[in-house]
Image (cartoon, rainbow, N blue to C red; front, side, top):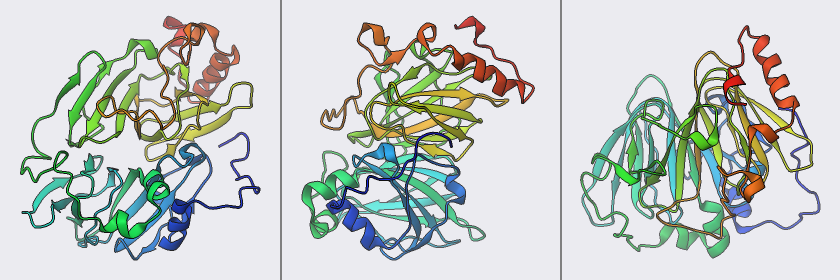
Length: 360
């Protein structure tokens, strides 16, 4: 990673309810612009969860959401949990199952594997199990805990309230197994509660973002938080664009780098490979470059549901429309002239060639 320092402003002497709660959890807190490899992130025993964990609060989260990594011991399980904040989970490695239930209702269990994606219905009891006896399971989760903690600043309420959101989940036995459906074909939005393998799910062309890239957006468990997957070909890069904070980008396939910058300021360069994660800060332009020998695919865990819109969390803006027309995207013709030269040089070092000529 290169670019400006990601250190915190020492003048910020007051701590939010969320920050105080994180401190009481007793696990590491990772800060900065990026995490090189979520699979190798050092973890510590996490008493409340019954596993090992670490919080990730990068600059781009900006207090609107967070992520954490959790590990389940071989053949083990985590403690039962429920809470009033939303949580979207990506399995990083291993296989296992999750059991969930409403207070007083029947339990149901669904299985998952490496790279599965799902969201736990809000305030629903759930417990995760490692289905392997020889190695741990590790997952990463993005949550709305900062928003909920700072709004209510009462953990007894957040973890102990008994209200059942039966409009989101009322114990349906096929909740995580029933087929998904398009919420919007035009905008590539798929409504589902479970994605078996994010590396293999079908994507759809998104011409506006450039370079022959494909994409799908998800609506998960009727949440206000959401996710999307994008993929772009070998020898290409996407157009630079910007949006609000809290877009947690996790690399699924490929290798390359991304540039992030606030208009008029120096660029931060983040190298990535499968398991890397970074979060573009609020209204920073960012641009993704594939320097590997296979298509690059990433998952973004973020705000921005089109079904349950929450406008107070930043402004998503218009990230696929020309900035000259009031949007938030820099078209190829208007990008810094050095972008293509630097990219071609990066490819040349690996014996690859740019295929951007057809798009520029």
